[in-house]
Image (cartoon, rainbow, N blue to C red):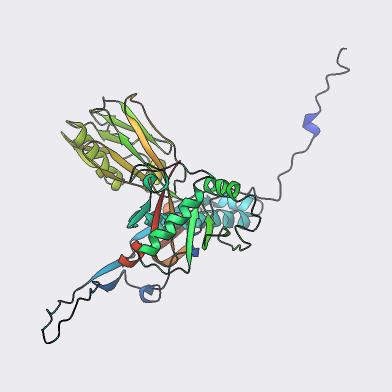
Length: 409
């Protein structure tokens, strides 16, 4: 049947802007549930607090009328330094401020988003402290015949073993039984819920504002998308020029000659052999905002700011044959390589088990905004700079109160 008409009446249909600002789905922070802020009163100003600790004493047998051998008392100290300062800067022109509807509400929404971004970074650094744990739960602990220091696949059949082993390791380190907790991923929570589905109150009824999902095996449970991710890159041989490795969406180039021009891709110089190439990349990753002069076995070209912001969350360690990359707050990160024989292995979510207050944190300045007019820079409008200032440390005692559970992603 032919169309009745072909009217074009859409110009008469008005369009409206919603009074609601679209909500952005953000990662929720959990760190305030388990870190200690006890040093905050001391570090209201200054930048370092030192904490001494004693070496452990061991008693021996005393023989009557026989002088004991006198022991030497020893102590040392560790320090927490306020050295993490992060910021976001944005500008809104006065013309836009004048003409936009709900101007103040829009500006405040961006300020809130910026503060949330800084809080998520604080959370990522807190969760990264798990790599300082003295003990871990690995494949050898969970799988019969498993391999030590490697990750394992979590299942509903072995999830209870994880809690049992983590408790065992803390008990062996004389960690108090109260205030124990675990920060788990959504995938971990799903597996746990399947495992306890027939036990309606297995996770208890406790909930808090910090993503608590209950209590299991005497541990308060918190769910987070901000866990530390790691993976190991093992090139089969020294890469060819133009080879790439991709980490969390950032494509890193390995080149015989650096371009000298910043792009979205960080550029690492291709060195004389595999060991030196890996070493050069390791140095660059651990200081991503510091360029490295190009020479036979050195060289790093900084990328543009968008990639640098991601690289700020990276860390790495290196051997002669492999590079281990950590992504703070990464959750489940995608890694790739352009070389067919170069492998990424041991993709791991570092799941934090421990006792609350094992990690010390001082937030000397909470995320907040400074504002200024743009006239001095030849523009009309307002600048907003949202920033924070904090330090974090797991002191010696705390390293025994944390357990790094190595779960394959």
